[in-house]
Amino acid sequence: MQLVDPFHRPIEYVRLSVTDRCDLRCGYCMPKGFRDFEEPEDWLSFDEIERVMAAFGRLGVTRIRLTGGEPLVRKHLPQLAARLSALPGIEDLSLSTNATRLAKHAQALKAAGISRLNASLDSLRADRFKAITQGKLDKVINGLMAARDAGFQPIKINMVVMAGVNDDEVEDMVDFCIEHDFTLRFIETMPMGETGLSASRHYVDLRQVRKRLEQRFELLPGMMPGGGPARYVRVAGTELRIGFITPISQHFCETCNRVRLSVDGTLYLCLGQDDKFELRPLLRDGISDSELEDAIRHAVALKPERHEFSDKPEQIVRFMSVTGG
Ligand code: SAM
Ligand code: SF4
Image 1 (spheres, rainbow, N blue to C red):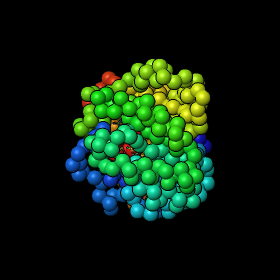
Image 2: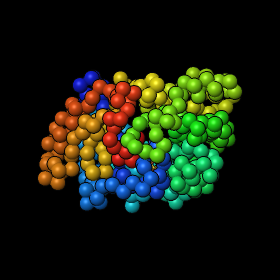
Image 3: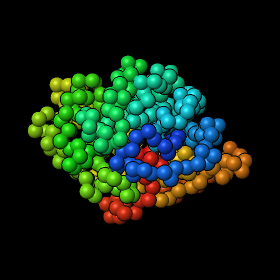
């Protein structure tokens, strides 16, 4: 029953964007003043989302990540999480968040069956955090501490490293994650349309960051559960694991195991290509469960071999807030 794409990659993971809206405006993700959001009537309802995810579960998908936009901007998210974590076949439900609303929701999310949590944090300096995201750092830090108190373990901090913006903070971020028992992942900026912090101007090759860290820390080979594209090391003498996500300098398309469902019910087959399949019209036309499964199989057959961020950086036309990273 397992979904397999034309390049023999099993698809066992769906990144589910539950909204394209966000309470932050990270300069690499969403341009300032961006207004072209999906209309709420085009959003899949919780019933529709549950139906699509149940079909994926029957087709061998075991893992779902809630993402966005900011998933916690969608009302009643813990209720959706509880419905998805109860689906047959779904073994792992995780969340990517900017953490601004975690202080309020961490307990409910944990109770709803979310097992793992990733949070964006690009700077530990309030003024700089504000310049990058338009938001307040202390809300994010409070949210992270609330998540830890609620029992989330591991909590992975995602830092997009940008030249001249925050690349002088990588060592500070390592110290912060050692102190608070977080896992740290550095991410290379991907070109995603005309954003304020453009990838071409601020791109950093993470191999350089790793070399720099090696001057201060002893890095040992490491592993991390989760099956994602990060390559991990462990910092000797500490519990800290550091992941490097290098879509540009060392792309990992050959092991890609995922598809993305946007809030309007479009399945995107690759983060860096436009191949897609619209499920919403079919759902609203009343297709049967077996027709839905056929539609998903058909969509997976459209999955391209690889992204072309390096060869055609201008090609991608959707902001990251649409497909959820
Ligand atoms: N709002 C949530 C968050 O910030 O974690 C979930 C959605 S966000 C689009 C998911 C991830 O995509 C974040 O870790 C963010 O840093 C990353 N991201 C957004 N735009 C990016 C870009 N142009 N290059 C690399 N990573 C990007
Ligand atoms: Fe919002 Fe996450 Fe995009 Fe930042 S990266 S603007 S927090 S969706």
